[in-house]
Image (cartoon, rainbow, N blue to C red):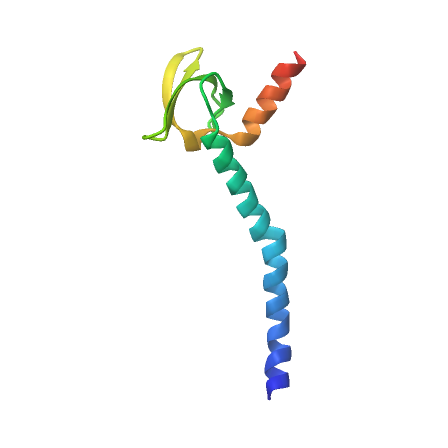
Length: 98
């Protein structure tokens, strides 16, 4: 009876292990990097918001978790979580090439 139960559970266990290493773990790692990026943002950083707005950080408010971004349209207050890590890094790479 134990062999039947053990061999029946093996495929599910292997499926969970594969899902963990190929989907769950990389996503957790990416989220951790994104949180670190958002906490390390400081005055003068050039960023791109998830909505596509480009700007420069003028002021950060750690207690509220917000940043004041200066754009061509003026100054706008955003949550730090609205800053895109990937887009900001691409923005900096293209700015360095110019």
